[in-house]
Image (cartoon, rainbow, N blue to C red):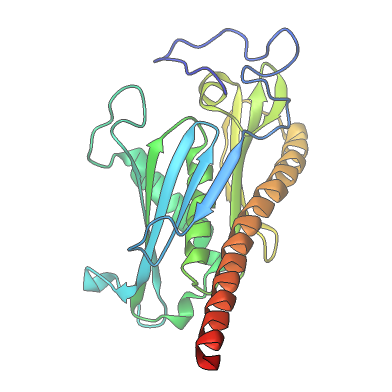
Length: 262
């Protein structure tokens, strides 16, 4: 894994002499990704994600009554996202109260995911997604969008598709996929992007840094390739859960059958 850099002391070069990035990755290589679902027992749906050094939980509750009541909509449900970073998730201790950045990312994640939900089936109610970043190392808005969509699917909420997100960018003049914390802060460009798979449309596209229009298409191609890999991981973890449930149900039925024979 990439060595953690304390405070604002970043290396002058973000590529090693052997042409690899500082954590040993190639230009289009994702950081290691691990996903799990059903990790919080008292939630209606939940997921956990490790993405590089990021460690993030997402818990879903709903449909349930909207508080405060004036936020309820008579013709559709409401999706509310609460993104929070633990005080110990970064080197400089973070204030416990949610800051402007956390409120912004909460809104971004909600906007990314809302198009895939059938909220019209749940008028007057709300779904609440609580995201807790336990360890942060670049790309938390993309990782949070990815894990929140997975938690909603785990809750069994009707969805048109999953949502996947990743950040692409430019470091030392080269295009790279999945920026780490160091690359995000010391690189020249950062472009987070999310896609809704039922129509393969972009639901998030932000940009920060220096990039010309001729590079944009190449960035989007690289992002699509990475997003397809992330989407497959999401699907695989959901399939594993339901195959496990299917096997457990089969075993229970066999036990009940043996009891009946006796």
